[in-house]
Image (cartoon, rainbow, N blue to C red; front, side, top):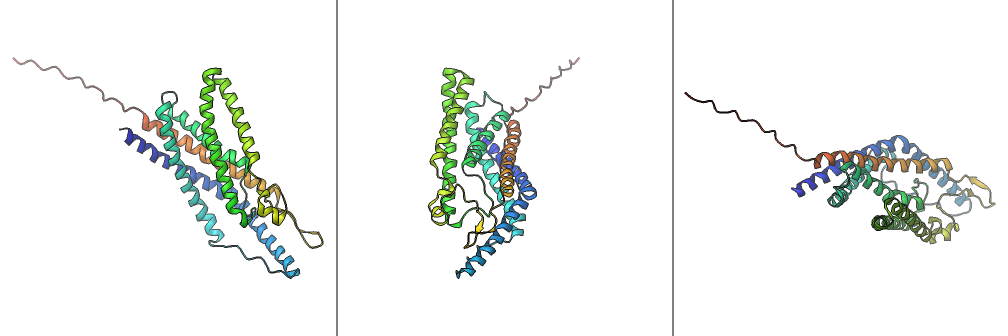
Length: 292
């Protein structure tokens, strides 16, 4: 019986994640895609200016980047499918975590409340904390030679964040038993913030990666700086700050939309799946008619 309920919950998680991914895809298509296009236009124009400078200096032009799929396919098919599939995967993982937590704390929290708590924790550990160290960047930001290093650093930050949040949960239980729920929660939050600040200080800034230091000097990020000619004159501006701000803002809203939809939708579905079956009403039996 429990296995059947768990399987139903996982499929409900997949459905909730698919809906969340669809809503995130619609938001991305309407709000984020114009910003992404501006970023690509900047990169294309900057490459043309840089190639002109290289030609004037007698250097070979930069090789064009791979363009396996056109922008129309990426915008209208690739990104939506990727977000829906990602949402379904996160929804299934969310359901597994919910089942494990519900077995132990199901009597203390209603399914909707528990789902919202888990969704908030997932957003915090999987996205928000790593985002504070390595925020999302549009296509024009980031050098091809550092893509593997950047990916490994981000995944490392996600792993540390998840493990730290789980450890903070057990620390909160320990401190709550001794100092009370409120004091234990506040103390745990402060410890978690201090610990993650130390971790972020240890993890290198993207501009401090070896390849970036050798080619561009030590910078904080990989955001393109103004392009200068041999005389030191600016011939092309740096990456627009407003485009970068909008992209990062929309990326955060996208993730808030994703995890809030998963938490609220799955909570509703889980509450229905876990509700006890109604008992059949007892039908009164008519008394037998006496015979003469």
